[in-house]
Length: 293
Image 1: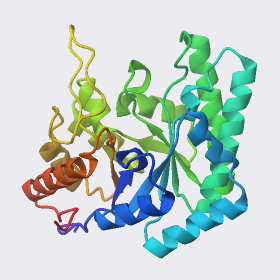
Image 2: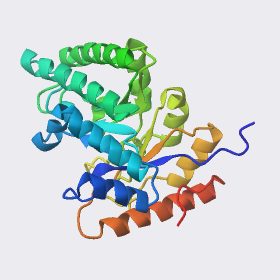
Image 3: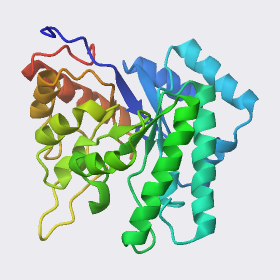
């Protein structure tokens, strides 16, 4: 059984493409590069948070472009809660957190997005304590019920800060939010960067993993804060060969997403380099290649 796993679907994080691209250019380029879907970003910037207020004409035009280019927006990276966290001591900010959640679920429902990735922060710009932690749990319980009603999956990202930086910690959180619409979205770079055994963590959390971010990082040390972004896959310390071997051993075919950032004019070359290195990791694990290069 499962001797021949099917090729996993692979998506691209929107910020790996130049910000000035139109939606049609983003979708066409994602298709040209051989990806199966695009992950839309709704971050804390005013520009991207405004997407939560798109009217139906804008939403359904984007959906028609997705159909035209055969590139769905399968997932949403919702990091706007970094600015408006559920754990905040300010009731007005917590109200905004709920409002952002409600709008994101509505947008996902209309766009056909299957998974909303939530930021695993209780707070980000204010001090954390037991009260911020308990408010975060309460916020996740409410968010899960909102998502459950809409039939949209929520998946908490395993983060680049200590608060929720392992799947082990997510499993503890999951006990408090047992909804089938509340799952995990591990970022292998963040787990590795905090010096956890990525393969053990993936094996532990596999029953609750909805999607996986592929990102490279440099590890935290006593004298170094680590580097959690802006690396091309293959430039850091993440062991992708071992990760794909673990995916095979655990029979995981959950969708994957390359998380990179278009930092300069070499963004397309960087994506191609990442694709080649991930194909090599598939070869090492005797799995179907992700890309036809």
